[in-house]
Each structure stands twice: as C-alpha cells, then as structure tokens.
Image (cartoon, rainbow, N blue to C red; front, top):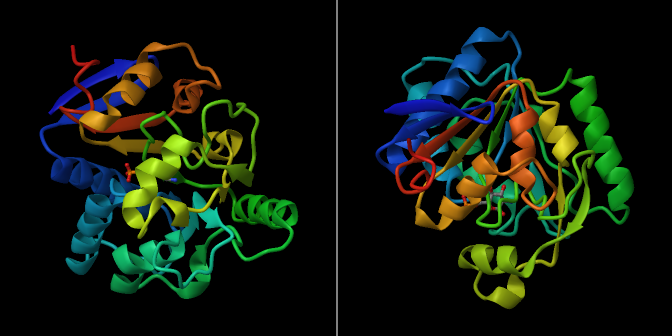
Length: 251
Ligand code: GLP
C-alpha cells in the first residue's frame, strides 16, 4: 500500500477494488468500535458493494455489532418508492442492512415519497443535527466528481435538498435500471455543507473511469465545478483508491 498526503487529504493507494473495500471497511470498523453510539453517513453505488461485503464479514466474525449504530444515507432518487429495486433503500437493505443486526429504527433516508421535498430535506438535516452529527461519512465519487448527488456547480454551503441529475450521471447510473429513460431526473441529497460537517470523511474509488475525477479533486483549488474538491478543506479526510483510479496522482 502506498500512502501520501495531497492538498490536506490522506491518500491510500491499494492494488485492487477488493482491497479498497477492505481498507474502507477497516476504517469504518475502527469508528464503530471506538464510539458508544456511532452515527454513520452511508453511500451507495458499485463502489459501496465491496465495502459492505467486507463489513458484513467483519460483523459475522463478531468484531463489532450494529446494535448501537445509526445511519443516514447520503441520497435517494426522487420520487421513488423504497420497494423499487433501483431505490437506494432497496440497495442498502440488500447489500448491508438485512445481513446485520442494525435496528430498523436506526436507519434513515431522505423521504423520497414526500410532496414537499423542501420540508422533508429540512427534517433530514434536523435529524442528523439532533443525533449529534455524523462521526464518519462514507463517499463514492461520480466520474464528474460529484459526491452524493451534488453535481458540478453545487456551492460549498449547500444543505440537503432536491436536485436535478446531470445527463452524464443518469447515463452512468443507467446500468442499475432497465433503460436510460427509467433513471429518475431528480434526487434528494445531503449538501456539501452537510457532508463537511461529518467529523471524518472516507471517499473510496476504483477503476479507470474515476481517474479524471480523482485528478481534478486532488490537484485543483476547491471549487463548485469539482464538488469533491471541497473535501480539501475537511480536517480529517481520507481517500482509498486502487491503482487505476489513482493513476494520475501517484508519486
Ligand atoms: C451515484 C451516487 C453517488 C456515488 C456515485 C458513484 O451517483 N449518488 O453517491 O458516489 O453514484 O457510483 P459508483 O460507485 O457506482 O461508480
């Protein structure tokens, strides 16, 4: 493993996607083990799959329990029914929650069935605040450097809100749907400021299609054009990357 710091971000480079999952799960397990009632921000997408597989493995070895863990997912398509197979609620149930001992009442998503997204997003922010904030947030990254569903152009002070998805994001995520037309146009997402409030951030990425996003994030000054670049201003942010995703920033 190669480790270095770029623009205030700790970067860990490993050989393969499975190892990205292992290292991210290790960092997550550390937070779970060292907090009495940890609050975690959760990501979805292909990158999350090896992370959650590894967390389930560690949980089944009884390294820790999810009984006292509370989760807030980063984002959800809007509008969407939680039972839809492409919904992030469905993804989280399938990939993590149904395999471990997390109490259902501890699991939170933005309300993607609401008729009043503004109110629902305000409620979500309040819930996170009342819970004392997130001890750790797990992130993936889009190939246009979005985090959550904060597309290029998102300001640093954004909070949980309804957003319109970029066409490139809809195309990238179409693989989880029967057809591109079925990918929703909108989503509810935590904002950049919501993410930055988490006490620790771990962003994971693998594969050649993330190389440009990682390069822009780790070499350019923070700006709304590269949403993940705001993470340079976070006091405790780690990137876990495979060699392919890190290709243009390797020392
Ligand atoms: C979606 C999610 C993001 C995620 C991104 C990357 O757009 N909203 O939170 O980071 O996809 O997904 P993947 O890991 O599948 O490349």
